[in-house]
Image 1 (tube, rainbow, N blue to C red):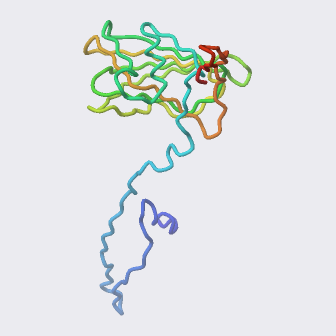
Image 2: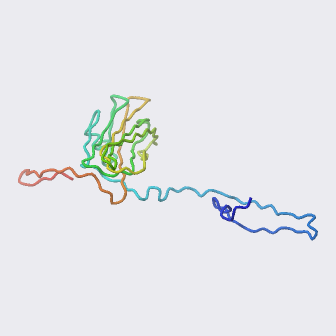
Length: 212
């Protein structure tokens, strides 16, 4: 059934006219068979995450963990050396919690790691709705990583007034957990959590400032 030329343009198709052989007495009319290659455009990913940016939340969140909270703080920076990673060989599961200094919008979460350092992540995002009531969103992921540190995007969306993100990591293969970085994403020019306020100190006749 003819439904219009727009249906001839799906997935790169094109509406064309072809010549038909006509006999004077219409006894042997023929259509010419034409084969057209119709294909779906290759997905490049360009623009998919173009409106959100990775943000640095150092000194903008309070960090607690089942073990090694100081290492969990290091996950907020993008340094890939061993000193700035999180290693736990005491158990096959752990948790890390990031409490925002003030509610802020959130548009994406990711993790940087490599190898078979863990195979299960349960993320709980807590936020306040338009009525000021606390809500939560639970995400379960089973990420895989290559032999070199790389990022896996765990969630992309939009939530306003986020005040806490908690991670539960599990490794079903061994008592080993390794994470290089925890990544947070926001829309461009979005309000970030408040900076932690620190006091200036006088040391040996000079003023020292804690980085904020």
